[in-house]
Amino acid sequence: MGHEPSFDPDRNLLTLAERRLVFHCHHYNVFLQRSIEDALGEDALDVQVSAAAESAREMLQRLWSSPSPFEARLTQAAAIFGQNGFGKAELSELHAGGGRVRLATSHYATGWQSRWGRSARPVCHFATGFWAGALAAATGLAPERVRAVEETCAAAGGETCCIRLEVR
Image 1 (spheres, helix red, strand yellow):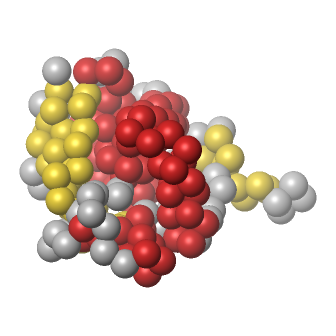
Image 2 (image 1 turned 120 degrees about the horizontal axis):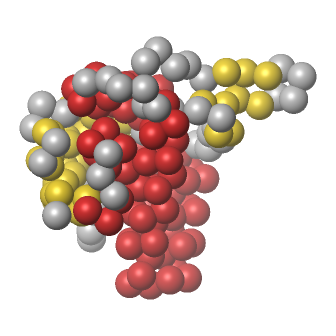
Image 3 (image 1 turned 45 degrees about the vertical axis):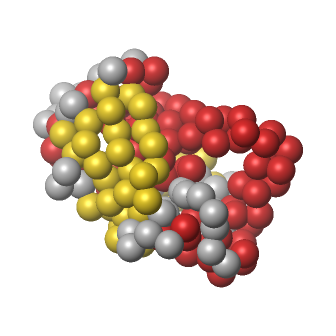
């Protein structure tokens, strides 16, 4: 499973699982997220979580085209999540039927607080979608069978960010 990102210096491209990786700082990402929220209102959360879930699921499925244990897949997903700067995920409560992912650190919660201060609601929409997509890919389930909700968020006063995942 040791798939690593690949850098093409001639084209200045970084890829993973045949998909380009693009990095943005927390200032850009939380401003983009807030712009989407301003434009879409109540639909913004579902749109952002769904887009992140599909992106993560599709990328991870490409990485996991050969059989590998569920736990190894989750470990690799957490490494990718962290290596891309999204935070440190703790997965001890996550299993094939669902559970929780706790973020010891969160790119979006930290970014949101540094830009706008405390939020009235959870803000880790990308992380929520990423873990829904990762669970779907790790189990081979259709993405619509995994539901994810951020229960607590550091940006909204939580001790940590906690994402609950349910398999339907």
